[in-house]
Picture 1: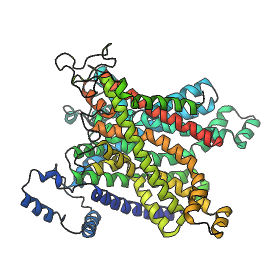
Picture 2 (picture 1 turned 90 degrees about the vertical axis):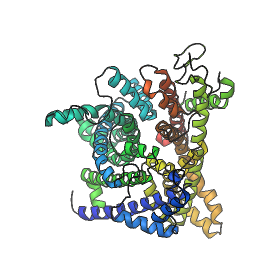
Picture 3 (picture 1 turned 30 degrees about the vertical axis):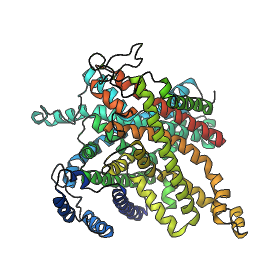
Picture 4 (picture 1 turned 45 degrees about the horizontal axis):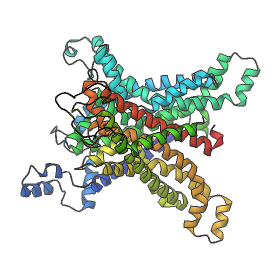
Length: 326
Length: 268
């Protein structure tokens, strides 16, 4: 880690807090800009005088600045409001869903980086050749693939068709309770494979393109020529000298990949009935449960901010130059 | 064939298909042709891509869907490029407090995953039209462009020729238009081109979730949603629209890469 790291973390956390504060303000502005208010959805089912009373109860008749202050105050106390469909605090509902989303995102990131870095390096070391060109076509196709469509293909072929994997959910609803600890872990893993593969492969296209150009850049540098000139084996040149440098920009990419993975998780979780935050948000919007949707969006932003800080720390750990300049 | 040319040809073909949909489509995209005999009919001469659950002709829906998806994407990208460029220019050139405030908003906008931003706005939208989707995606998609333009504007500001022009009394608006804008035009054009593909993907996702383009209007996303429960029995329903999306995003990606190579020879 090195000297100055605690100060660095403190500074990044402070910056992150500012970003999260602005995120909450942005969400408030977006809600205000939308036509209608949270109660228009129930308006047709409620008598007009009852509607006025509800507006008063929710404070929606107050001036916007006052509503904003109250909204911030509630958020600061960890009060995200009450879900209109689940009739329990939004935070409780999200707390149940977030571990599933984190599990899926972590597994997807693993697939993304294993496949993406692997393909990128293979392409760069075979550049220029037919292998490189062919794989370029593969990665740009992955990059262009709608993630929910890829998920539906996997679901149809490997889930319902061949029956190798379950057709949805995070656990087997019938047998899970009676399984041993090991059995439960295996059951979870079995359910995780297809969603993680879908989300990870869709993101791997971009990672591979990025890794390929980073590796090509490094391979053209003087120290690589020097390493070859002094007669090192090509394996050592590639893995020890080139790869270690070409991986540095990819670590930063992990932070950037997080918003993409969370966006994708809304769709992938819906396809595979995965009980995470994304599916919760998607279902809530169908039912007009706006406190749930905004709560999920704010927490997704918090995850992105924390993820970026972790990626920065990992970059500093991997690259001594960043520690010196900071 | 260079990438630029390949991309231009692909995008040209797509645009032609979308523009000529009324001529090319054999049926109306919303007509229920025959609910007794033509539900989920496999591809045939009369229906080259088959029909859907409601006996609508899929080729016709796909062609009209191209109009809807491409129109939304182009309008949204035009909006986000316009807003992003203007904001980035002002923030980068003004510096100071304006710059800090604007860039914190941009940081926040980039921190919320895109689909979540769209969901937040759509949550209070009563009736969603394609125009509304384009506006929502446009006004929630400008943050990346603003950051890029701002960086360029801030660096150009410090160059001698800009300082000289300022000393000579060139008005700020002209300074931005003549000296700053040309420097950012290239990267902005590339980002906009790649952005069209990204918006097509997001719109398809929202329509798939049922919160985007409303039925019975065709969009590639809601056609896939139509087919998702009969993937094994009638795979042609979701297949055609999925391939259309892949080809479209691919076309704009290739065109964007080609433009980048063309505008910035160093990236080759």
